[in-house]
Amino acid sequence: MTGLVALAAVTAGAVIAFGSSPGGSDAAVTPSATAPATGAAARPAPSVSPTAPGTPSAAPGKPTGQVADGAHTGDLRYFLVPPPEGADVYGDPDGSADSAADVAAGAADGEQAARALSTYGFRAAATRTYLTADGVSEVTVELVRLRGPGQAAAYYAASAYQATALPLQGGYPARGYDLSSGSAESTDTLLAVSYQGDVHITISVTGGSTPSRALLQHVLDAQHRRLSTGR
Image 1 (cartoon, rainbow, N blue to C red):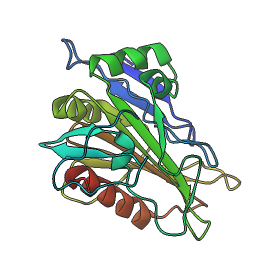
Image 2: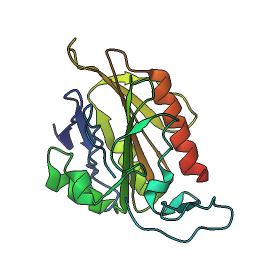
Image 3: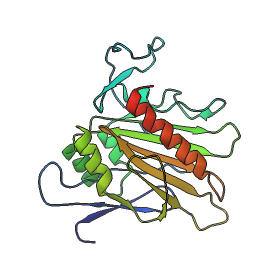
């Protein structure tokens, strides 16, 4: 596969290929972009900055952040879309924080993934996984903040999943995939990738033989809006 790096996804054995082009810092991309299997803990992000005027104040000890012109600062976990009422959050209710090495660990070639994250200026990652109140769907949201909006756009543009394409709406760049397991004994996963400003978004919905496309779209819309507005 010339000029491409194939990464094995955890979910449904999907393979993710990231295109590479000659050149400098805006060339190759090799993000992890993997969705955890059912019941697995999620991924994660970084430091805290003072709350800017107009930014909702957080409870003591809670992550805080702010956004301006597509640049997100503070604790990236603040920008994770809140889980719905009654959801069972796995691990820390605020989400988890990871280093570039932690994110790269989800790739088949961790060293190459780490180099790509460095090339695109990895800043932070944040992840939260929860089970919906009805016990049907497991949702994982992963955010990866890069050096700037241009790097996030290139990171998104270079990724491609070898899976069935899933139409998405929303009026912003986004791609969806149906990662069918092909087994009656296994649950299937729907996945969406997008970006807003300097943050790359990966969302997965796993549950039963027919995961909810409406839920995937709803979570993606809400996540994109939170990154855009900080609310």
